[in-house]
Length: 228
Image (cartoon, rainbow, N blue to C red; front, side, top):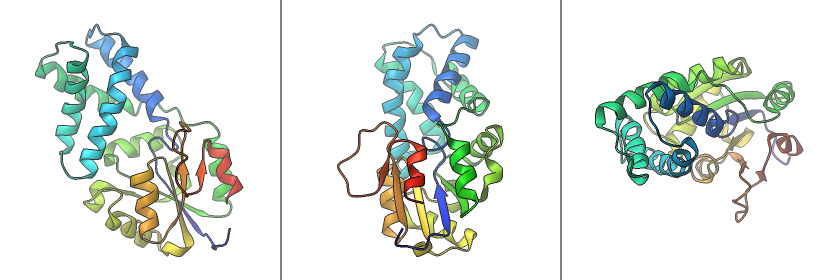
C-alpha cells in the first residue's frame, strides 16, 4: 500500500460477526419460547430491510435506542399482517437482546485474517452497536483479545459516520488518520465516514451488490490480505 498503515479499525456487525445468521437463530429461539406462530423465513424477509432502515434512523439521531428496538419489530409484524400486542413486542425486544450474543457465528476466515493482521498491525473496533451487547458478542465469539481498543457510539455520543466517533477512536488508539484504515460493510457509515477524516478504507461488501463506487472493495474477508 502507498500509505504506511499501522492501525486497522474494524466494524463488528456484518463485518466480522455474522449478524444476519445470529439474528435469525435468535428469532427462531424467542419465537418458539413465546409461541409466536409466524414462519421465520417470512418474518426475516421483511424484518432485515426494516432493521437496516431503523439503524439508519438511529445513526441520523431520528429515533432512540428504545424506539429502534420496538419499532423494527412492530413494523415487521404489521407488514406481515400478524397481530402482536405491545406487551409481547416488548418481551420479544428484551429477549432478542438477551439471547442475541449467545449465538456467535463469525464470517468465514475471521480467525485466520485476524491472526495474520495482528502480527503486523494494531487492531481496533468502531461500532454503532450497543455497548453491553457488543462486548458480549466479542467475548462470546472469542475475538475480543485481538483488539486493543473498542469505541462504540454510546461512548462517543454520536454514531458513524459522524467524524467525532472516528476521531475519538483514533485518540483512544493513539493513531493518526493517515496511518489508519477502516474496514466495514456500510458504505455510508464505515467507508464514507472514515474517508472524510482522512483514513484509508476497505468496503466489505459481503452480499456483493455494491460495486458502483471507487473505494477498495472485498467480498470475503481473506481478500483483505491482498491490500494489507
